[in-house]
Length: 391
Length: 244
Image (tube, rainbow over all chains, first blue to last red; front, top):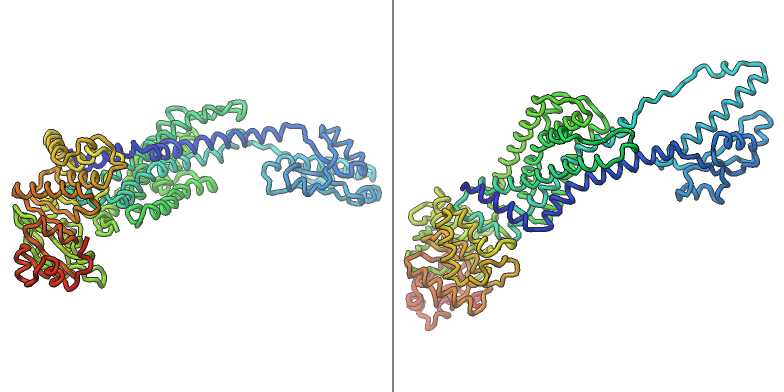
């Protein structure tokens, strides 16, 4: 048996006996994404629907000052409520999404034909209140336009004079495209699971082994450092890959759980697509393991390795975030760039578009090549005297 | 046989080993004696190829360790200063892993492991996980994994460190057995009594240099001292760090 295989089997077996490693590599790591994703999806979709369809409840201050306006609002189906004592505090503390205040000067301005002030109190940073605010504002503007048209007609002027444009909203957004933003995060969760899955092993097999004083005996065996490193790196890859496949499987399950009536369409990840995604993303396991091994071998202690690797986990976020903020059609350079390529190709697969075999091969080959460069660097680090001496 | 000639090694401005030479013959126990920080561990690390000497040469069974480190390591069984075990593996699994790394085939491996477990009296811990082993149990396991490939040359860095009296006695008995089998045994120690009791050939190291060598009788004669203790103090220059 080759020495690297001996090292590989030992690392896989030994770490499989550690409940903490198993839980973090094969449970929390890969499952956090899919669960979080499903919860977010249900929450956001539910909230949008709720606010758009619910009866609009509107606390009004000084309703007696504008009886016509209030009557019109009630006519439009608004449930006018008595206002809280301190409307600003009520909004700030999120008891109310929006409060309408009719100032004392309203009636005076109104009867004299001046512009009458209305205060709409809300917190623009609360995204969940946005739909309520928008609906309230739209109602008030509609009322204003109706009154304006009446006043113009009284003066013998056609209302069209002040409304040269008639903009009609034809929002083509479907529920499917509204979830696009969330779906764009999916590649990130997948790639993340590979990095999280390999992290503990990468630390344990290098700085961990040195700290437990077993690295020196290992390096004295007649096995080349390259073989030792290879065995350890492949064991890390195996855990990263397992974590990744569990993550994909969890997505298949969790997306299937989201009720159709909530989104208006099936969010399910078909098995075929899931398999394609696994093929596309599996080389990331090598990339994660090789970069993590390099970082762990550079660190002087277990703690230091842990700190560095927590930063490294953020690395896969970069391409996904770029694609979320700036969705692009995958260009050749993007497909050939590790992490970017996988993010883009998974995105295409999720949108139900076909992905060419050449793109998958190109992306995988470049990822494997970059991983090999890191592996070569790791071998160099393994050959340094500093790695071996445990204090 | 192990031949170390004139090796030097510096760490930054500290000259840890400053020209150490000795020959460790087969069928003998050679002891490197010196106070803490004298350069014993650095010398041994160069011998088992973990550190590169700045100058000098080392040969194990006539193989130059700098030219052919893998072949040299194959002929060495080493108990290094670091003797951590894999805590999630049993004593037996720890030994087996190193046997496989030494390239033993499965039947030889099982035979060797059985033999070592019997000779080191490890039957009680054979199938126990190493987590929670006593210091003595740890050292036994570490020695077994170092010797699993039946090496002709055995190097031990402070082997009795942290052992109780009983464990020390049984380890000494085992080392004498290995010597009587004709192997070359090298050990380091800062405990004078231990080296005097066990070693056929003593190499006294201080400040990175060999300050005296020979049998204990020869050392007495050389220094004209009346006791071994006085002889060591004489050659090292002070008695500091030599007592247990």
